[in-house]
Amino acid sequence: MTGEVPRPRPDGVDPSHWRGRATDPDADRSRAEDTAPEAVARLRARSRALLRDLLRPHRARLGFAAALLLAQNAAAMAGPYLVMLGIDRAVPPLRAGDPGPLAAVAGAFAVAAGTEYAARRGFLALSARIGQAVLLDLRQRVYGHFLRLCVGFHERYTSGRVVSRLTSDLDSIAELVDGGIDSLVTATLTVVSVAAVLLWLDLPLAAVALLAFPFLFALSRWFARASAGAWRRSRDAAALMIVHFVESLRGVRAVQAFRREQRNQQIFDGLNDEYRRANLYGFRLIATYSPGIKVIGNGTVAVVLGYGGWRVLGGGMEVGVLAAFLLYLRRFFEPMQELSQFYNTLQSATAALEKLAGVLDEPPGVPEPPRPTPLPAGPQRGAVSFRAVSFGYRPQAPILTGLELRVPAGQTVALIGPTGAGKSTIAKLLARFHDPDTGTVELDGVDLRDLADAALRRAVVLVTQENHLFNGTVAENIRFGRPAADDAAVEAAARAIGAHDFIVGLPDGYATDVHRRGGRLSAGQRQLVAFARAFLADPRVLILDEATSSLDVPTERLVQRALGTVLRDRTALIIAHRLSTVETADRVLVLDGGRIVEDGPPARLSAAGGRYAALHRHWRASLI
Image (spheres, one colour):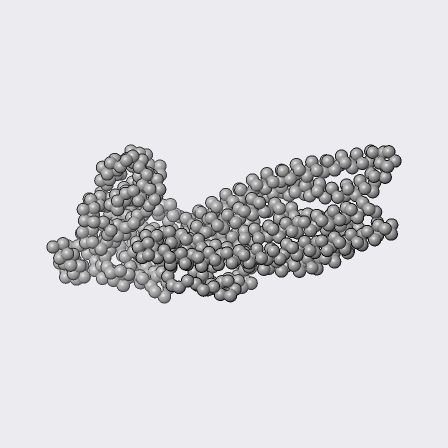
């Protein structure tokens, strides 16, 4: 990240931060659009649809949990009513020497307390099981969807945002599921139940209590609106902070090489302060709402106590009814205060669910065909055709225009040309990281768009300059393309490539942990492991994208020997700047501006005096 430290606007939002959200599918619009009523409504509709879909498999258990919650609420509501009966119906007989009514009321109170405990315990256990099952399903969906989205999506959607979705956003939802949702539901049900009981218990007294409702409604409505925006802004600020953190650590070598530590720290401090301000604003809202509820509640209790006491003195009301009414009234306002404590969790989780729904709604750039076409069987396999292919990463800037290319099965074709000529674009289209805008890319006569993704990945393998090795052993990395391969097959692939000798020389041989990104191995060793992986996968088509460009000459010679084994009896496309690699090809394509300007065997093109011949003379001169 470059530029000056962002200067926050008076409202606490920095425009440059929001411009960074353009990589987010649910945020690649301006802040004004993102907060427009129709945009917010769309986000909420998507999140509600996702929530319904997540809860659908648990309908039976949700019904049972609702029954337990109703039983708990009914038992809790019985307490003040039993107090009323004890005062008005059981105390007078007790004065006359009859303890029976009071014992009956006490027994009923004990039964109600036991029922409330059992129902509460059952509800918490069942709701926890449902909540964890929903979280498990959601994590699997988000992770799986990220894996299925095309490379183009991941090129514009930063890894920091991926981490934010799988950690920060899911943690917000987990916090609600683990500690908030049962309290929210219980508090809401209590408020509704108490309101109904108050109306039934004494209508005139309830009418006096209802005088507080306009103030309560206005305060709650203000809090709901203000906090929704506050916690959505908090989620965005958290995502931006995680993005910068992840990107800085991924590029830590460049950060340290250019002495950017202080500059990146300043940027992080600005993002961190924005996150602090967003959270602080939300807590300030709670600091206004929660005491406000308490003031309204205490004022209502005082008015009801005064009016009720006046009626008791006049004989228009019994003491037990007033006592029960006050107990119920306290139960009405206490959950309202609890709701304020959990509302921030609810809003944060709602904002997170909207983000996750946006990701899950992102359509795959290369969708699976509804009815896949199988690849034809036979010894001659791997024929590639580009028929009138046009493609551009942006509509206004095409890379390829009307490309026509036929590669027979088993032929090795080298692609050379200046940067931006379209070499890597051809490789990405053949690997189906993207689909062409017009035309078709075919493998053995089948349009790649008609192939099942699993079949395509088995048939076409891409080996890049920085081929990724995962945490794990050498053997696990070699069998990455064929997880079911046994140890003998893994060793055979390594021997065929020429990697066996260096592997057995490692501390634990094939069981040696390669560490993060293969950091325990040299560049040449990593490339040999990648070739062994490709050899074991046995694809019809192998694409080598600058696979030897970062190697020194001795290592390149070692890798070149491995290439002869990897390329044998399969179609291959080689993208390379080093002509030592190109000379192993059966055919060379020279590209410029997305067009094929020369096509033929290396020897013939060298003698023709064209662009390839000029490159060949320059390469020969560099070796002298």
